[in-house]
Structure formats: C-alpha cells, structure tokens
Length: 378
Image (cartoon, rainbow, N blue to C red; front, side, top):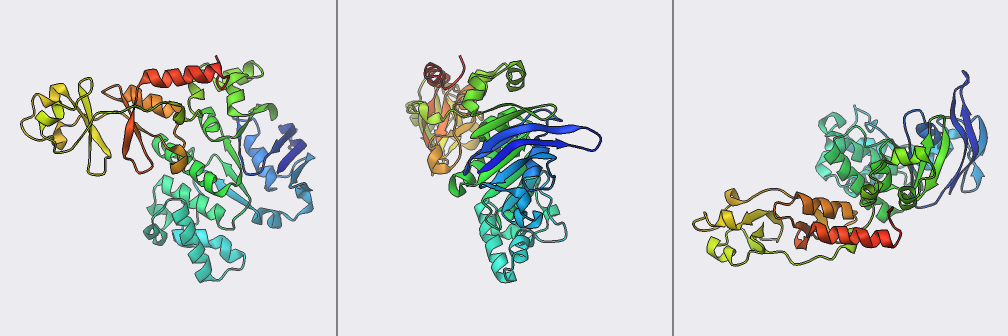
C-alpha cells in the first residue's frame, strides 16, 4: 500500500507542483493519475521512488516512510517505465532486460535466462532478444521497457505516460497487454496519463488532478463517470460520459446470438442457402473470420467463394475476456456491430475463432440495463 499524507512539492521559485495530496493506493491494483498539463501527476509519481523529494508531508510504502530508505535501496523494489522506453541503445534487447538482475548480483547466464522469460511474458518472440533497440518498433520497445521494469520482480510498478508516443492502434494493444499482465502478476501499478479514455480503461482507481497539483476526485471509473464532483471533473471527463462508460463495462453482459458463416471455398449456390438477412461471414479452416459475403455478391459468383469476393469491414471483439486476459467491453462490442457491413459484430474467442454475433440493439440494451443498475451515468 502506498499512502500520500498531505504531500506538497514546492520548488525554489515558489511554484507549487503538488499541493497537500492525500490518497491511498491499494495493493495489487492499477491506480491512474490523470489531468491536464501542469497538474503535478508526473511529480506525484516520481516522488514515490524519490526521483523527486517532497517538500512536506509523507509518503508511506507498506506503512514505512520512504525517507527512511536510501533512494537506491528504495528503487530496487520499484519498477519504472517511461515514455520511449529509455533503453540502452548499445545493448541488445536481451541484455537490456538482463541489466537489472545482473546489478542485483545474478550471474550473466541466469540473468539472460530471466530476461528471455520476461520477453515471452510481455509477448515478444525470442529472436528479438538479439536485436538492438533501434531495430524494434515503438511498441516493441515499450514492451521491452516493461520487461526490464519487471526484471527484479518488484511489487510496485510506476509507469509515466508509457504509451503516449506510439500510434493509436499500437497503444490499444499495449493497454490490453498491460491488463493481461496485471491479471497474471497482480502488481501495485501507478500509471500517469493525460488521456481520460486510457485512465478509464486501465484504472481500478482514478485520481483526477487540477492544475496546481490539487486532487479533484479520487474514485473508481464508474463513480467518476456517474458522479463527477464538480464542473472541472465533468468537463475533463467529457460530455460523452455515458459512451466512455462503455469502455470498462464487460462485453459478457451482451447476449451473443448465432451468426451465418461459410468456409472459404464454399460453392456460391450452397452459401446462398446459409445467408442470414442477406449476409454471411466467411471463415478459414480454423473458423477465424476473413470477411463477409452478401446475397448481391454471391449472385455474381460462378463457382466457389474466393478471397477476391470478400467484403472487408467490421472490427472484432473478444467474448471470453477472462480467458484471454484482454478486456472485451461494451465499447468493443458496439464498435464491432456499427462497423460491420452486415450490422452484426463478430464475437471471437481467445484464439480468434468465431463464437457468434451481436447487433447494436443488443449492446444498447445491455447499456440500458447497466444504467438501471447504476453502473453508468444516466
């Protein structure tokens, strides 16, 4: 547990970055600091590992004042991930991750073995271990940064806008990866972002900070969206609070119905007999979706369905989120339904195989049920 007790950071020029911050960060949870530029979120994070020292107040880690420990000793039990990963450019990926175990006294072979395990843990293939950071994509570099932060198996992990420098698609993948890792490892994670969507997706608790370093609201994502304490929080969260709530409500609330499907290579006349409302999803030999065919398309096909006959479009969402470690949400399900050319969102299992379909109407009904139960704002 991490406790901020009336913590203030005032610089020599009189600037107050953090002003009497009081909050408690629970063990094994993701706590997100979010707010506009200049609100003190990064300063608050860096005071936990004493990269910045508080001017007054106290920060307790498991009931002990962090000022009682030497900064170097304190940091050995705290992982730290920053924007752009901060990797050593002259060391291979494997040796970047092995650096921490070696500093803690592990032999080189053991440290590299641990590093290889961690690369697999964060979803990177073993062959990337021989490359240098410049040979990796931005998303891959960030995964290496997470692996290095986990190398000493720290109970606390600090993450300072780690995904802000990558493109939106990669960022979404990295967020899902972090949620998967957290479901397995159960670390105490303090995460800084300026993106309210990211905060709501990742946080078990979200601390909204004002400019000047004052805490505006500290709550669960559901409570934050349903009951912002004042106009500042309501404005920061945004007017589309109900839609944002879709991002953390689980998609398992949506009933999945059957969806018409045909394997690639099916004769067009056979496929026409399997259509539902004029559409069918085309799947491969592992029942993974490849695209759609419509009655209009099939009427012009002479012979079997081939790749060039497929209609692309429509995102997918993972239905069994708990099994996959990826957070399938109502927002994912609604996007899948709205972006589909057939107006049917495809639900897949952890392997990517089709398990059924949903419509926008079924997702919105689930949202209405959540509103009635008080899970989202009305």
